Image (cartoon, rainbow, N blue to C red; front, side):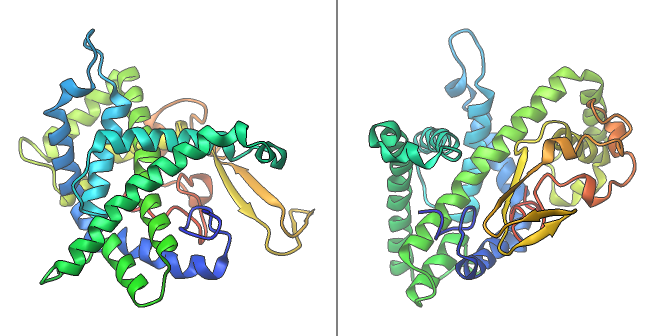
Length: 318
């Protein structure tokens, strides 16, 4: 179960503290530097096969395209095992549909297996196919004469298991989370951004003018990113106006008092990020406008990746 493995819903603080550093290392340093190159290559690869996500009327399934690109990028960064992206992306979609359906169900729902059986199957289908990929990775590592200079995420976890630091369940769930997180949240974020660009042609024109001025006809590089200020403001405003994750959940580990309210140990605390991002600090809080990020925004007003120790580990690489 996810409550004792991975990092997303791991409710064992001691184990979470052991696993989280593996995510932090993979999502920073060399991995962060390589991301732009892998994103570019994956985007080129799937744009060349655009017909695969285009129906008979010429309509492109943009969300599926984003999921394919993002999953391929994640695989190249964190697992590096050839796979059928279409099969995996479909299973990821069903996995999150099951997750979203079950996460807020009352306990009584799970007393009747016929209610949740199909959702359980979707979760197990993804686990099984990823476990096959992980086993291929294990075999590759065991027969390799030379290791790469920078170990990928999966390799580090497998070696940690070999040394008794992690269990096979820890490794498998962590790799599943790393592979599926971006195709779920990142792909939807990109989809929202493309929708907003289509709805705001003047913003699109400003972004294109800046890209042409900074990048020109060559391939984009990591060093270009600090100079793309309009694009940066657009990304921030997109995440503020249309957050892909509208809630942040925490659990009280001790009895506490928050702003005068008594909070009992074990209480689930849910913060409405979507509402927090529409406060009067922003010039146009209820509109999509790049003016909202013309000046520096204090962190307390803009937290698209959550906050604290359990903030999204991938916030820098995203």
